[in-house]
Image 1: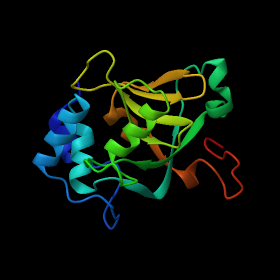
Image 2: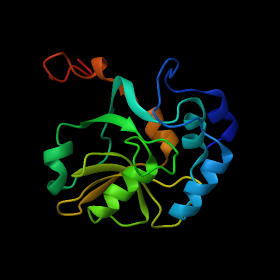
Image 3: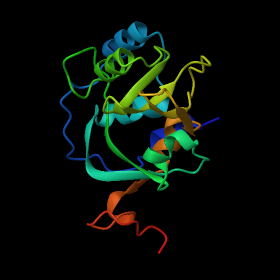
Image 4: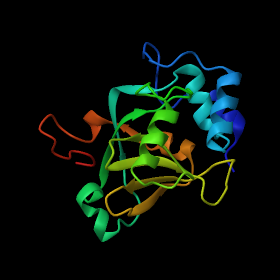
Length: 182
């Protein structure tokens, strides 16, 4: 179980100066989005959204894939890292590029289960909360591709996901070569 006090105290990266196209987070907006999606967001996600309500990550971040990758996903995750482009914020808007309602609706339109709530993706691949087991405290974070619906569980929680983000320039050089651990 994740310690809620630890989450409140620790920001895993500095969002100061980052802009969000979403409006400032309110309890009313949280409740509307949660009711619409039929879920409860994890505290670690809401705490991040309270300081920065989603959008492009101003600094590049990647995470190391620390689990076995199914053969059908090697094309995407085979080098052992994945770049995170954005994290969708809490907004009921379906027109905002950085709204979790928009990203989830788009993923659902691509055939992804309605119990999978995407917070980053491009139509072919998604990072998402997996609510299929109805874990409303800390749903796992999965990577799923929408061509063959192959997926892999990457993290046990959003907090673990945030903790795993590494600045891009510590993992890849300017030419895209992996320098992590060298």
